[in-house]
Length: 120
Image (cartoon, rainbow, N blue to C red; front, side, top):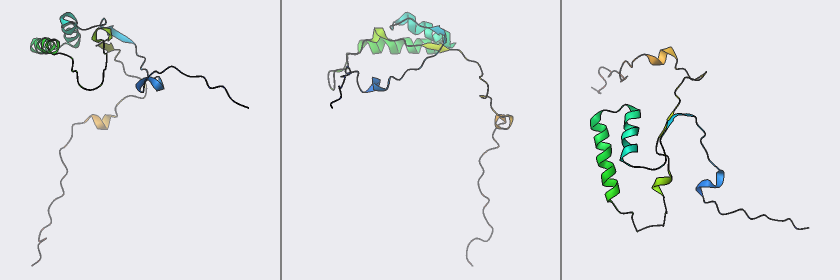
């Protein structure tokens, strides 16, 4: 009595467990990456102007670099990725921090040296 084996399509090592993170978002940037999206993400995060300028300069450098030709062929389409999703931030039941842990730390607790610890 033989059993029929159904061949599954080759979905790759990363996707074989069908890992997904479903999340609801307040804001979701459009697919792709360009200077407008970089500036929009920086604005959504409430970053200062110098940080936005740093990100835009870094984006220019990224675009000026060629894709590496060594290693495996990764065939990544950078314009088919959502680069930013701002999640809904609200406290869930059971996710509160105990009052005791909210107090600032009193510092490091080093043991006090013993007196006359050297042999005579």
